[in-house]
Image (tube, rainbow over all chains, first blue to last red; front, side, top):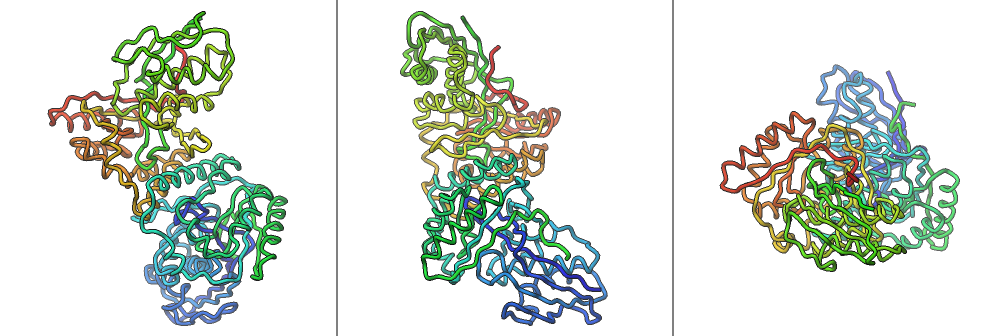
Length: 305
Length: 305
């Protein structure tokens, strides 16, 4: 028995939703293949597209797969092929796609004992070896699709948020490295009380805008007063790209995950193409190579193909 | 021409929604009467139920009424009677009811040139002389009804949040004074970054729970890690009442506004009555007199009676 799955890229944080919000992209993602084997345990048999360890306990997908396989009784093992399309360190959930893909694939071969929501917890285990801490803001949208909110971690509480149908994301990925340690180091351990309140107001506006299909409210809410002011200095020409996106009609723009990717949200595909063009034009003036993507919000999430 | 209106009490903050969320109560509120007069400007002709200044520029309702009357062209003046039922300093929006009532009444006599949402800004002007700063978290739910979110202030951005139909509030008002200055002094000017993120997660959960009629999610989200830990020390036996409310089935409980009132949210009227009994029993052991109220969420807000 063999299945092949598509593991989509994701945008975490979404400005006011730092560490708690994420959304799932449609046409950017890894592929993974899962096969039952007589040898018990997990084996990684093939990796393309990235230089990753085959040793299961050092591989994000391997750790996540084992976390799930070890908790469900079964009489077979699983072989995994990983075909990376999402670049590591791009800020659009590359390691999360592997972790989410691993638990999704293993769950399929086990006969789906767990729901997608229950799988988030296991995917976090894999994600932890990539990021150093357990986070769900990328694995949740990868598994559930659409927009997701991580309300809290004790216990893990993940909620899918309905969203309007014409929402598109544009992602510009500058080919530079933002080290996770640096991305963390710029954050202050304390923040002004009034900024914390401003952030809650915007997060409330974002959630309300998503539920009521109020694109303008979504746009007004896409502000981050806690993180972006510090992290943007790690992404050269961030402000230029953001201004270009908004001036060309984007609802809002910001840092995708820990960066360096820059995202914009737009109403409708045509406008998204305009915004992508403006962001590209803006970044073409730098000497930094980049990729870009335009994607509708992916309501389905990870899937068998 | 004369109209009489009902100006409901409100619960601001709702734990995770400090300074931004509020809800409108149904059967607790002031009454106000407005009459056109040939004398231009605003006159306060009668006040019952509280010892408040008749001087318009020192009276919350007077200031709010003037703020609106002065911006709309008209050829008459307005007389106001204020019949206070909500005790000053109770933490359930007493001054806000006066401010919201004033602008609502004046707007009615002017022929409704402004929407309820537009009136929030003018009511804030009156509220400012009571609280020392312009806040909308009580005047917004008083004017709009239901639950409201103040996304931000520059410019003022108030959003009504849909909510499930069986939501009831219980309010216990201990007869003690919490000075606004004290309530502010206990707040730290900075807060831990991770607490700010926890607060945004809970606020997101509250808004999502309200939109999707998910009572349990509303309950899980009713946590305040930024303010309650400090302010509760100003309200004797707060923890006891909160525990009594939750143990008897409340979804959540916390400080109403700046206190001293303690609120609980419940699913259904019968449960609300049980919770109210448990909260009363708990507080009866103290020597502090108190009032209590049980109210459905008031979807309509302020109204002509």
